[in-house]
Image (cartoon, rainbow, N blue to C red; front, side, top):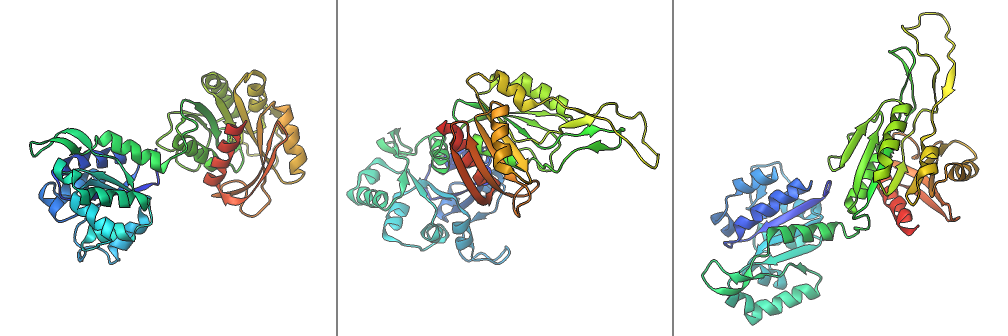
Length: 394
């Protein structure tokens, strides 16, 4: 879920340090790259080794440590982070943040970062209610800091009141909500096809195309980031399938992909045909590798997967792709109508930066209602989110 997101956990010196271990573990299980910075006092409660084991990354404590490759470490951590989470946040660190004090590795890193900062207070109830602390919390909120408020209950010191660290699960959920504010696919399952198919010629050679599966994989990541579930029908791809995908069906030929899609589509709300299945196959594959000076193959048409889905889709949304080298708009519009699709994503694969096996794309998105959206050169992940935006707007 949080793949390619870096979460910086800033651990300060309070008894609730041990709960930060669960936060780190849960975020790593969610796919995040978790980095930990600790105050020296925090190491009196939980050792850096514990957080290194849970995060699989080195832990920063000293501003002047010199046992790693040289870099200005507090700056590198500050730049790397997509979000910083202060957990637990003691009264001391809250007051330092409010005053802009940077006198150790943790506070210098937080002062240097431009990422959102989530503060999770934990302290004695009397400290929490002290006007100085409350004024500084209010000041930080005014400056744009986010907070997961402390809970009420029995505290480690024996007092009862507000000041207990919020549940680790609540902190993790808030991190997810802040990193992925769009959850418009929650409760929806999306069937995505990706990659090329192969049609056997003689058991050694085959017919195929240049599709890598990159667009389909980025669509899968985007759906997961926006709260949806993904069934991925993967042909022959050159990139790994994201770990977050809920169900993967691996296929080789177009007929196998057809069978898989027709078996899985009924459980899905949206079907996105990002794969490039081979349109033709040899009518009769050879029993052995051909050795003759020339070879003539008779090709027959493969089943049209998109058209088959279009005939039975009902209220489901169908997105198809159209890769062409000329007459892009006319051919894309014809495909949109012929397949009974809701959206067609058209690519002129002759353009630099567009087409197969690239990390970028250029596209024209057309809808059945007549809307046309031009997408200039961008990453395939950016295009994936635009496609999902268009699906939501239908």
